[in-house]
Image 1 (spheres, rainbow, N blue to C red):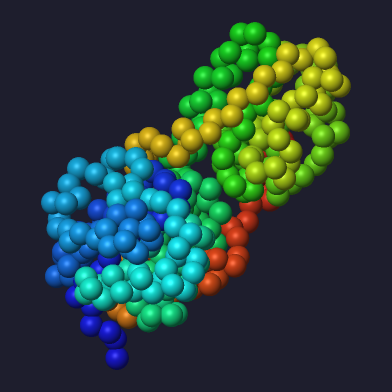
Image 2 (cartoon, rainbow, N blue to C red):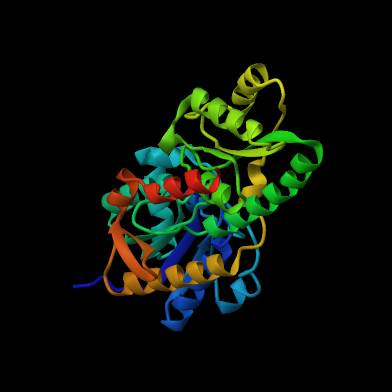
Length: 327
């Protein structure tokens, strides 16, 4: 027999991503549509422990669909790693009559959600919100498309300078040891080289490629580098190139947190809205301990444990395409 759900809490956890507000809005309005009381938890699991909880209605989320970040805010919460912290969060759920939760975030957020559900039997549905696109069980995550567009815009501007001054730019993008952003924006921006952890080819391969480009008459180049250290720090790689290929004037740009901000793209707004509505309806149907995602433009579900333990994989055909397009 399905648990009777009268009140659903929604929170955002981990790094912010464009489209999180659209997901919150969808959860709240889906609750209202189904005569469920929506509750917003401010500052993620930290706010759940501290009781920063407020009942919401359809007007509470008016005009937020196009805003970046998360108006519920997010915060690190070391206390939630411990059973005592989760017990405090459970007590707050009891005090506020919370019957189920929707957690918007990444694998760290889902790990906490899974433990909380297992220990206290409060149904939880996860929604993947991260620009890294590294969550297993969904083709795309909320915020990924907007981050790609932000990076493309920045790289296009940097290429103008690279071309004007005949420079080689190393541009480091986010991804947390995942190459999705670097690979796709590298192809989209026409980068000469793309360095990602999934295809570590070594410095010698990079040097050989840049030397071929130089001999072929290229006076400027763009190299996209995924952050995380697996392919080496951008400044360290640049130093090697400066030493081995002195004809190049080498510059490094780290795009940083501009990739996490900004107004979400239409695609992210639609994705977030679909996942938010589906999460609420899944809870009402008795589902729990799962993440809702998208596969081939259809909403799908995978267990939180699967989403946590597996990782989204780079399409090897894209690597092949990148090699050909950069020649």
